[in-house]
Length: 206
Image (tube, rainbow, N blue to C red; front, side, top):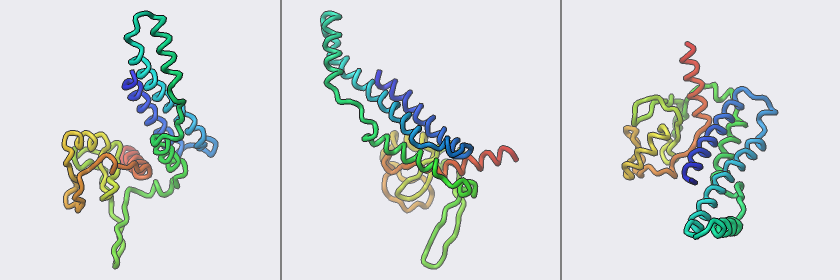
């Protein structure tokens, strides 16, 4: 049960992040209340935690011979498990950091385009960052950045690729990053994601 609940809650958390994106673009100060997002995220994380506790209690109770014994053991095992503390989890900290970045975003910067600054001792230049996934050659829907080299990939594609090939290196031609791509290297970049969204909306309207 916990696995199914986790998938559904993960979808709900992504919807929460998407809502923060919309609020950042179109909402007022009242809607940009990060505490409200935090409360909803706490509830979602506790749902996952409760499902995990229920699965554990079930495994310890399922072999009981009577319903009464099962109920007693199940309740006892549930009561022994620690109370959910969502704010102490890495997931809470990661998602709240992303939501906080979205809600505090300068929308003029977001609207300025999808660019990156390359600096050297003698020059500084701004280059366009492609919204095409290097693996599928299709437009990215959820870009994530490789924190080692700074290149972007579509999240679902790169995660599936490193699952199939754990020795995958950055697929960008000419990239000097020799490390294998790891899930820990992939970071969210809500500003870049919103820039791509804005650009796509502009292209569709033209």
